[in-house]
Amino acid sequence: MSPPTPRSPVSATRLDRHIRSLSLQLSPTPRGARLARLIATEQLRSWGLPLHPAEHIVAELAANAATHGRVPGRDFRLLLYVVGDTLRIEVTDTRGDRLPHLRQVAPDGECGRGLLLVDALADRWGVTEGPAPRKTVWAEVDTRPTASQSVPLR
Image 1 (tube, rainbow, N blue to C red):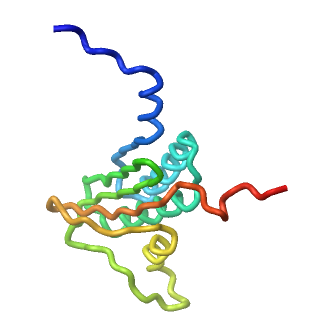
Image 2: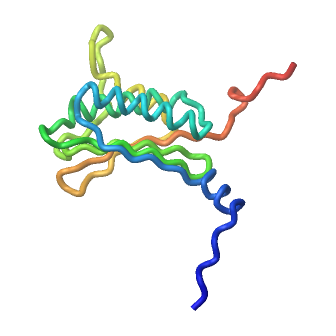
Image 3: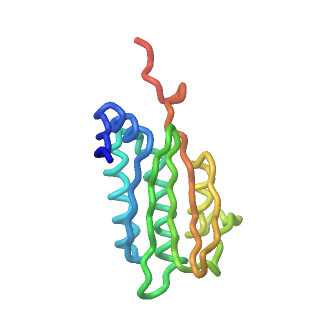
């Protein structure tokens, strides 16, 4: 049997540009949520992707995992991956019994706006249940440039 043929640098580069991922386990604490946002921001920057709106979505989903999905001794997971022109953000926690939902918030209310922000900023978002006791809240952002993101003509 002949040895496997190594991948050429060109095909490896094409693959790396189209499928990229980052997976982290973090403590379900305010510090863990803040670390999720900081690491995600640096990863997006290294991939050459726009930080807005993804950094805000990561911040909200991680804060929700640390606040509403917290179980002592169990971490939450942040997963970022890019396939083609779509960035998918997933945050998994171990409180599958507490599914998130959009709700009306009083104008003077001090909390409850996180998913409203995710809904406004993401192109798509949702919740995947299981396996027990977990749930994953995910959001997708299209990364291809739009007319508003393009460089203005001189």
